[in-house]
Image (tube, rainbow, N blue to C red; front, side):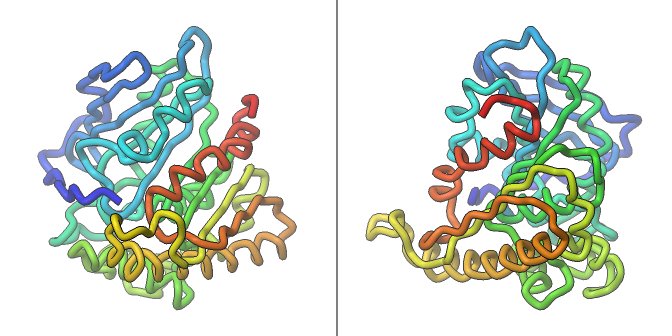
Length: 309
């Protein structure tokens, strides 16, 4: 995960969401600067474009992990998205920033991690701007890993009908069971935040409202892909890699994700909601594995957006 924890501080209240900057980084990569009243600042949004922009096309909103950088998206920098989506007829929207936010609207401004109103930004403020600027067809799906997988699932269940599909890798999907609470508390406290500031009293109604496992019925009708590894060291854990962080930290995180993924699968089966679940025999919580798996998410995402796989 990215280690750039730069965080913009809230500024004066803005009049309305708007695109205030645009930079073409390559023929298929544009970076927008978006003024967000909810976040009280500007946000960088990288968008990968298809080769042919002559016809309206759908969008994939890609969310990332706990150290989501404000300067760029790890999906574009090291996650393989630029190469993989280069020949796909879809916009890939990569939102910058949101360290430890779980892409949610926090109840309180946190002294450690600041103002988080990402759900409002992603759901209400950003889509109308991009739909108009990029001439999309309005169809949207979600892609997320780690914290972004949990955030994407929350957005999906809290806004049924808004997204056509979702691909989630290595996430935790409950906020109320012991595993889920531990995941959230660690995600927030590890970056200097207070978990009580996200949805109020820990374990209270605000937490229950964000529990995808409890609200799994809201996912019905979506195309769903979910995956996890085991936390057992795999092909990328070599003497040349950062073995301590990858094995001692990334291993247990991925093992916990697997437990949560299994619980979500069980719940969806009980509800008879179709979904694709993939479990890998080895692998820790690291970008190498997510980059390798990105092509595996495409059949589900393509089907959700009526695109060829």
